[in-house]
Length: 242
Image (tube, rainbow, N blue to C red; front, side, top):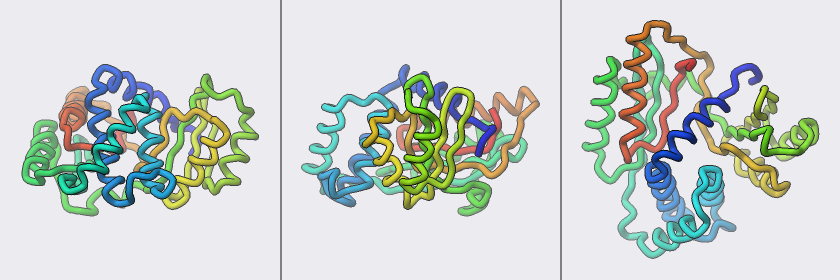
């Protein structure tokens, strides 16, 4: 895994999110609602909710906002009607894009996602058309500036908890897990008070595509910006080497 750090990209995303906290908090709020509906409001008995809470904390969501979201979801189960849906498609120069959404109106979301791809010169494809180019993995990023632990000790904690891989980059450590082992590894790091810049199950590209044409770069950014502005869109994965 070494040699392709995504930490700079994560920091860039966080800066964007800091300017629009409402967006990321909306995303996490929906994930909390779905997790509570599926597994109950007690994090001790709901690993999916624990993972969402960890994601919320990594994005600086205040504890009282998290608690309010859980209580609201628990008291509002009948009205939680978000449906998860995934779109796959192509951006400029054959770049692969996966879009995960949680929506209460599939027609609206489908229209918005298709519009974003079209405006950026791309197109939505069929299910499975690009997902085979990605591996679903748990990914935990630790900022070296925030972590005082020795790299070897950190690696042993992660591997002992079930991590598949550990990589040291210039400014960060990256821990990779199988999706099923993600919660256990994240909780082991949390128990050692190790701060995590990012912790989530994600889609990691097997190969990356470079865009050298300025017009292609503008179009790709247009797609990503339009998807980022859509409240129904929870996450976007792509294999563009930024």
